Length: 375
Image (cartoon, rainbow, N blue to C red; front, side, top):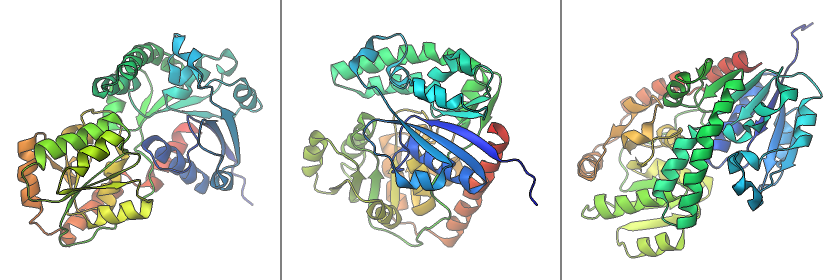
């Protein structure tokens, strides 16, 4: 007879974590899945604003409850950041008060709960997905539309102030080593647990492909700026075909790429189609102009693709430096692309990937550490 007491955990998610198709929700979904598979009864609470309730969440969780996120403009005029103020629910608090189970808050977005005195005696951990005010400052710098630019700068200021609320949490669980170092300089209890992800094994082709690939959410200014930089500054005089794949490319990007003879745009590819592109590319190019959070698309590349050519901001405390080729300017990117296009990817390189990724990004090891921390 098993006398081990059941472990229950409330997880409050900033969004419905299915489909798991962008950075933040990928970590939430695969974390919930790993916890459930390891016997934790997950009570999942999701803020809903556009994504539908998902049957798969009911299958893997003990219970799932949805709350409407209030996205009205009135929250823009409050002192609390919009991403926090718009995620406030009395019925969520009432549900949390029905028991005494520990709580895991996903992102600063859900941390208005830390200000609620009724929950002050509870063990509340926060999964930090970013240093949010830095992230918003970088969004502001990348944005050209005036209203959006103002909104991002304004939100960054509010987020920096609101971040002090994290002192009320039992502990912070950072998604990257860089973020863990930042938070450890400001708060007492900080742990690093790498991102949870869908990849179980390395699945890379040996040999050579005949094109380079850039992929990302193309509706985000940071990503379409990266594409423009690659096309204008790096691939402009290279005889190397570039494929650009991603969600929701804006019209200006579609028009821009249509005029480039050696560049092919693949808009809104399915997961299967994107995976095939990652596997068949000779070089997966991943660059970013902001060193914030963990870029989960880099993990996807390392589990499934040949050479990963990145700039150092892409690595951002991920501890994946030794598996990537790093180039920080157009000249070096060109030089490395020319070299890598001629270099076959070997079994030896695949073995190194397997070894390194298993060491740090193995969901099984990381979930054990997480259970120890939060339950």
